[in-house]
Length: 329
Image (cartoon, rainbow, N blue to C red; front, side):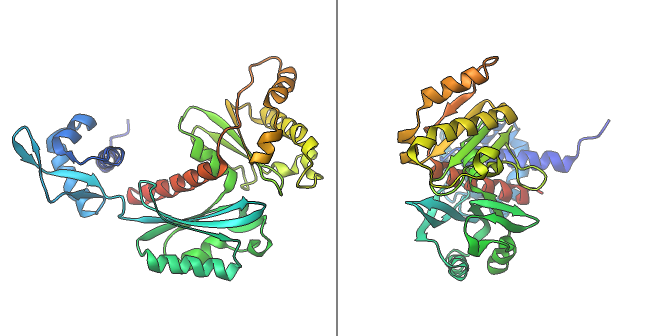
């Protein structure tokens, strides 16, 4: 039988206290932490000094009253580290980059939208943001493409193809950098249930659709990060974009049919712009799918989600999770 590792137990309990304070916007006393964590006050007294010393929690200078007594209170230090988010997105039929800086609660402290920059302009902006926000401790870049062997092999913007984007960003800001596919991030941003299998499909106006698969809150990427590159499916491979209005519903039907046959998910998220939504006949598409998959119930098909907000939410979530891993590794 494997013995419990005391260090692992300590790390788990510390993360438990940090998560409690993350979820609670109000300061909490040791007694409140004990009640909600089910850890003894004695244990909490041993854990807190190290977490406070690491600047992950803040012990408030002012004590709060608890039944006539004065007690120390603690809050989560959301601004201890900041995350730089570089979001590539198709906006008004052109590629746009939105730069965000987020704290560890996912609160946006800076935002800058710009039409697609040159490669040099992109790196200049990142360098300037690091100087403006020296607490940036991680960068996450959302792209309409795929990174293979640390190089952007599939990318809708030619000037960014065939480069090691992470290596260049890390050299500029001297902290870890990650790249994530846009639809992967958007679907991941929607997910909240560990038990679900969710497929997301993004239909941009001027490019082929992309797909993602989230299995139990993990992004499935395949051997070469190519899972979800559905532009290689036969019905999409020769298609020219943008498509005509009378092609939209058949293209959605054939694409959803393909992912249902491959993945059998519990939910399918369809991300599309207003033009596509106005043309999309969901009842007709579901009717055709029910005839094809007549032996089982169809998954929930949700076409109401906003791509940009879920995409941003997913990038922030990935960034926070990576910082959490580094803090407790």
